[in-house]
Structure formats: structure tokens, C-alpha cells
Image (cartoon, rainbow, N blue to C red; front, side, top):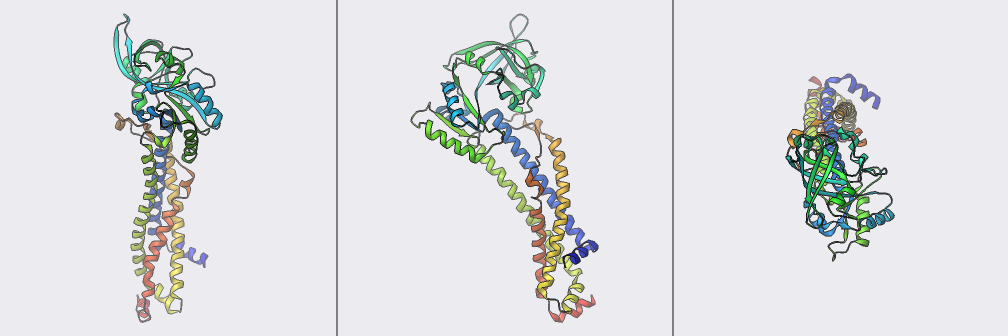
Length: 424
């Protein structure tokens, strides 16, 4: 029976081509949109974790309440001891100290007078240690545009756009002006060893990277760190595991009555990411539901039109004694075959388009000139394992639902109408 129905679907393409095309288009859009949303979502999580939030982050309770201001006067003291405890209690994560701060970069002329100035977003990380994983994590080597990475204390990196704005070349000296941990003015000369471009608008506008030991000296933060970030070994964020680690740490080390006691935050607790994560996750389900309903309505109408054309066939099958339920079931079986055929072709086309978007992406840097979010300038799709089968959900459901709705008319057929149907 299945083979017979399959031959009918293939040979009588007049009744199967239009539904299959509708299914293919819907499945293609579902696959592309699923990969597109997951690509943007994944990049947002990845860039936020690498440059700002970590998978988990340890700060003081007071710092956490004012995190948007990056208040280094509320930084963690005895940072080395905290890192040792973290590595002992949670050895599966990679831990690193960071200091984020704001400042002013002054570029002098040949006479030592100010030639140009610009505000900078400072980030102090482990740049000089041979065992540091920060260079690889932030992809600094690939982001290097001019010059070279810092090799000695007193060397910094500037974002390439920022350096060109200041008219600073690698090898030249600049002065950083900021405030120390205790509120006094900090002024320190540094040599620009190179320039970088991360492809993130926030960082590329005015980033300044230095080794954390230099920042601790310049900002009067000996054995202190603004933040201690933790990363999972595979660099993939796991919300449930992060929540468990956060609960264990806070129950042991965090004291609500002490505003300078450490507290751990997970990625979703920062930068309003919790709502965005839940929103984007829900959007994928919304797309699937919308395409199922839309395609079901179209295929319902297609089924009604096909039913009018097939009145003679249905009348003959009922006249020779075929059960109405059997006729109805065969229509459903046909719709499943059409759904599979359309889903296969739609998924193949959708994956092809998603692959192109994954490789080339779409540059939206011009639209994010004033953005403060950790988004890449180029949005790319991401082909995940679910992309290979997610299109079959709307593809099969819509064809079956559309056929079931249009096929109800079979049960309303009366024997008195059969001879009229046979004449058609």
C-alpha cells in the first residue's frame, strides 16, 4: 500500500507539486531563521563572555550593585587568595583576574606637548605570562593589525581605529590618565606595542589593553582585581552548571552583611542578558509555530482544491465499497510522503543558505556605531545539529494538519452523490 501511494504521489505531480513547494519554502525559511537566530544568539553569548561577563564572575557585593560604572574603588582585595580558593574548589574552570577601568589617553607631539587625546575603555588582563589563556580567548593574535604583542612591562595595545584617531604609531609613547583605587589621579607613560581590531564596535572605538601587573601598579591596586572571571574548559556556556557553581560559592564565601565580601554572578545575571536569553530562545519556538499554522492554512486550501479535482476518484473508490476511514487514512499517508519530500528539499536548500551566511555573514557595523552591547560587527548564522531536523517539524505537521482538515469532507459524502461524482 505504501509503495502504491508513493508511486501515485510521484507520478501525479499535479496534485503533489504545489503542496511540496509550499512545504519546501516553509521548511527552508524555518531552517534559515533557526540557524540565523542561533548564530546571533551564540555570538552574543560568546562575545559577552569573552570580553565582559565570563561564564561566571566573582566581584564584591558593592561592585556588583554598581557594575555599569566599573568602580575600581570597590574592587576585590587579596585577589591571589581568592583565585587559589576558586582553583581548589572549582578546578574544572579556568580562572583569571581582570581590571576594567576608564581613562584618558594623551598622545604627545615631538615637543612633548599634547597633540591629541581620547577617552579609552581600559582592560587589564594577563598578557605577559607564558601560561596565560587570555590571548587565545580574546583572539588577540588574529586581531593584531599593526606592531606586535606586548613583550615587556610598560607596553600596551590600542584598538586600531582609536590609534589612527590619535595618530599614534606602534613604538610611540602615550600617557594614560585615570583614577586609582583610592580616588587619586593616576598618570603613567606606556609604549604602544601594537594595534588590534576585534570586530566588536564597543572595543574597536577606544580599547586599551595592558598587562594586569602594569594596571595594578598604575592604579594602586596591589594584589587587587576588579573582577575574577571563570570559563568552562570547552568555552561553551552551560547555564545549569554555572548556576550550581554560583550557589556553592555564594553559600560558602559571600556574606550579605559585608558589602566587600565576594559574590559570584553567572553570565545571565549581567548586562540584562537573562531576559534576552529567554526572549531569543522563545523566538525560535514562535517561528516554528507561525510557520506550522501558516503552511497548514495554505495546505488546507490546497487540499480543498485538490479534493474538488479528485471528486471522481473519491466517488469511484467509495462506490466500489472502500471504507471512508480507509480513504481518509490514505490521504493522510500521502500527505506524510509529501511532507517528507518537501522537508528534505527545503532542509537541503535552507542548510545551503545557512552555510553561506555562516561563512560570509552580514556586516551591520554601520548600524551599531553607538551600540554599547557586545555584538560582533558581522552577524553570522550557525548550523547546529538541530538544524538538520527542525524543518521536519513544521513540514510534516502542516501537511498532515492541512490534509486532516480538508479530508473531513469525505465523511460528509452521501451515496446519492456518487453517480454525480463519477460523471465529473
